[in-house]
Image (tube, rainbow, N blue to C red):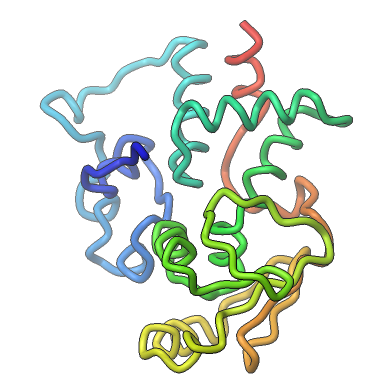
Amino acid sequence: MARYTDAVCRQCRREGQKLFLKGERCYSDKCAINRRSFAPGQHGKARKKLSEYGLQLREKQKARRYYGVLEGQFHHYFEMAERKAGITGENLLQILESRLDNVVYRLGFAMSRPEARQLVVHGHFTVNGKKVNIPSYLVSAGDVIAVQQKSKQSEKFKVVAEANANRPVPAWLEVDRENQSGKVVALPSRDQIDLDIQETLIVELYSK
């Protein structure tokens, strides 16, 4: 399966803001945005005025990079959002938030979305008691996500649990830190998604 293999900090610099792709590093002075707050490449420091299309494209790319989704899958999610009742842009963000790797990250079981994706692929989580190792699996309201029993004693999960002990969890999720499990109370509404994304620009881009 195709995946991005270049330095992820370049993605943050390209979008001009933190996408929180490297866990603790993003909160430290080592963050690339803090050290070089301009786009990567030879002409990164040059100020460019974006066209309407350019603004729409950058917003789509930013959303893709937040969630670690490739173009084909992102377009598939957009088509799903169009078919659902409601506002297409908000439906799109709700679908992206419903990905298992994102939910694992939101519950505090991983330091970043890329790390959550890796942990899911390695089979460390269950959904409603059944092992699921597909990061793009879409959860539903009422689903219970838990760390596998045999994984709870690993040093990795102990470190993550300690680091995220006080990290807030979105209102649409409930977490039981003692048992390392969480529940999807309801699918998120737009005001419960705290990412700086203008979804209307993405809808305009795909509507051309």
